[in-house]
Length: 112
Image (cartoon, rainbow, N blue to C red; front, side, top):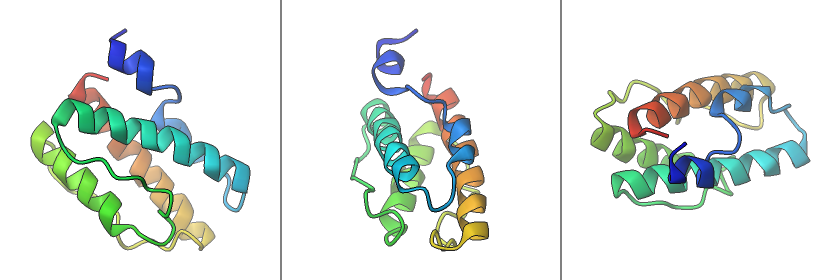
C-alpha cells in the first residue's frame, strides 16, 4: 500500500453511498473522510485543496476541485456535481452515489 493511501484513504468512497440522509453524525464522519480524500488528490495532482465543511450550501468550490483534479488526471469531467439539493433526500442520495463513483475513478487514476 502506498504511503499516501495508508495516510489518507480510510474508508473507500463507494461506501459513501450508504451515508444515511439526515444523520448528523454520519454526515460529519463523511465530511472528515471526504476532506482526507481531497487532500490526497490535491497532494498528488498539485491542485488546490479547500475545506468542504459547507458542502450542503456550497457545491461550486467542491465541483471546481474535482474539475481541476480530473484535468490533471486526464479524466473527462462528465459528472454534474452542482444540480443537487443536499437537503432533499432523493437529491442527497443521487449526489452521494455519483460523487462516490467519481472519487473511486479519481483514486484509481491517482494510484490511491
